[in-house]
Image (cartoon, rainbow, N blue to C red; front, side):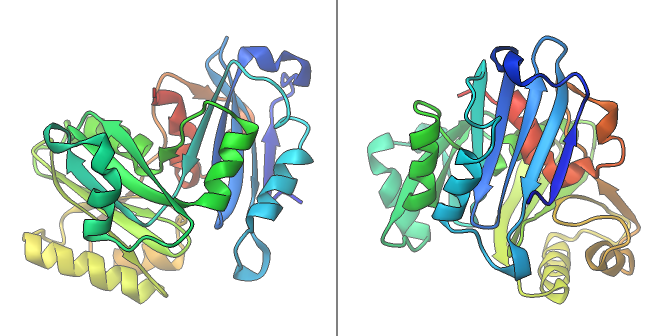
Length: 281
């Protein structure tokens, strides 16, 4: 059963040719959202998280797709995002597509069945080189042939680079996934720092972020922008409230709106799923 399901009364399963489908898939969870491209309005989200703090297998994800009436329909566009802790940035002028596996292995360990993928981003001018388990990556190929998956930081960088331009100093963003988080810092509108850390508890996140603040000379008057698996009054935001003055939960932003049924949804939790609408291959 879905962990979350919201849909507008105008949603029509027979009109998917006018809709755009955004899918987020990984062993940590599966979600999809539908954008009515005529009105540029999100009209549906359905999300499933694994039970008992475990992980989804590729077989379970395939079952979710096969048994969902909406996911077997044809859409105007389909975009897929895959969260992964294992990625590196390569400056675009230095990037050679034939060497993407070499770039990855220089910084990270590749598992036996991993597929190495690259995405181009414009700000910074670079390529995201990342790995995905082959069993999950090939599911996207199977159900949506020709759709090239995005790393989860692809839509994230797109929004943060825009948001940072209105801030003269440091723009700090922490994106939290189930067992890892990204911290991205823009300074003066340019990328200053980007890294990923695995964590076991909230103390790990506090330790890594506050240590980066110390090294970068960022004071407790800074604002931290959050997205992903965190929310108001949870342990993460409550922990950080003891050390920093301002906390903002960053909502998705682009040429789209949301049905009223999303009014009570913490949109920042699905920032990368919704922001897929901003991404072009």
